[in-house]
Image 1 (tube, helix red, strand yellow):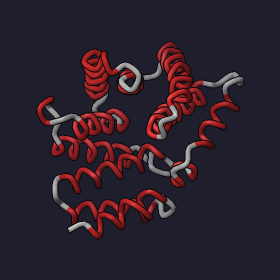
Image 2 (cartoon, rainbow, N blue to C red):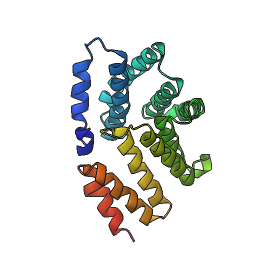
Image 3 (cartoon, rainbow, N blue to C red):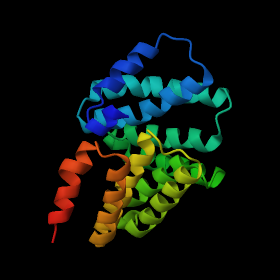
Image 4 (spheres, rainbow, N blue to C red):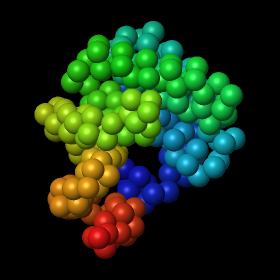
Length: 213
């Protein structure tokens, strides 16, 4: 969690490598798969495509293993949606195929469990980043982020949870894009009360938001 706060997830990579050779319990497998979910996205953001490819293979294997061990369909669908979204980075010529699969799995995730915060957050991101001409909506994204945050909080899944903090940041950004700077600031202030060491928010995003006219 502290590594996520710092914005440097190299520690995640080292930790994941140290766990690879262990015989994982179901709970550990769930944790590892969730961290791979975040680590791959970070690697792609850092243009570290080789590392991303390596962990996409492991991620795919762990998704299958989780499914075989009885993980709920909603979470499996979240991960399969993300895997297809990540694949877009390496298969631009198959954009329509991978984008369609990502959206289909995201819809399945919410349909199979409307209280799964990961599923709701994923739907929010798809609405947020999809162009309006393809059905994307910042207003819909805002609603999904709000539902995801409520679900995290109702399930007491907020302490040292990078997924929760990431969704909170997305929530603030959705308000900003919709022109509601006041609400965006309120969300940022809430994040900083629970995660004061969140470097990107504290030192970059929040100051820029405050200075935005």
